[in-house]
Length: 323
Ligand code: MG
Image (cartoon, rainbow, N blue to C red; front, side, top):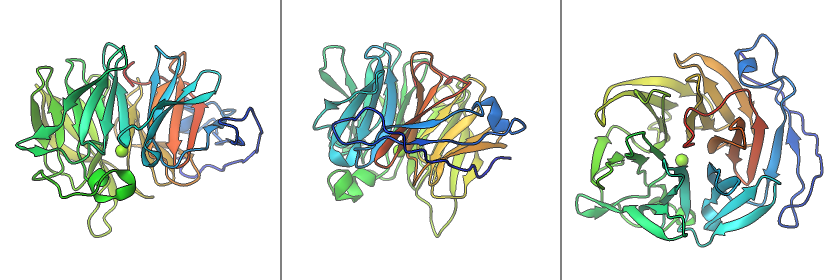
């Protein structure tokens, strides 16, 4: 198994982004016999697209814009990197937005820390609030979301945006826990699990029969784990540990069409097969928070790692077009 890939820093200068960025490229080495070779070509290079962020999260490819939107959570803005690698401000202030995803109509769904909301950006740029309160209280700070084929939006609601001033506005929680919610197409919210200290990233298997959820709030030094649940009629069952992360905790999750699970972790992207066997590791300098498939052919994997946004061409595609 390829658990520790060498990284080659080439220091390639490319066109400046926002006037300052000096771009580098990282090179994971993939041996032909490794399971990672089904995901990455041995010649694959991890490019730095942007390094002017403070804390980058929530990448999502927007076909309508021909670019990648991501959240610079602590700088309170969202950015857009177009196909030619130009970066521009997309939304500012962003209410300390974090996770982003798309619905079936290609509209941007965004989790906001500062306002404790999940919102939708309409095609005219207007913001529609989709979720804000539950059981009489404000949500904590929605972190990440995914849209199911039935139109339901599943999202996590940990407390990072109300615990830390740089991530939102500190205040007491008004919820009885840190839940994973399902917002039905009629707008109603239900708690699908209350079994997390801090639920974080989430992703469905290609057939949407399994939901993977990252646990990023460990107790007493316990390892960070990704849990899996069976999904049926909008409800979760058969909770089990899918994978354990050795460095840091798991954050954003994605699944490819082959059912492999990708997680942003403390030392880069970790990848497992659908049955939980390690596939490989794409290292980053420092933690990698979130990932997304995109690009014109859907085969580019984008990584948000601290102040940087990185990209690598893969041999695979994300499980859904709604990355
Ligand atoms: Mg997250």
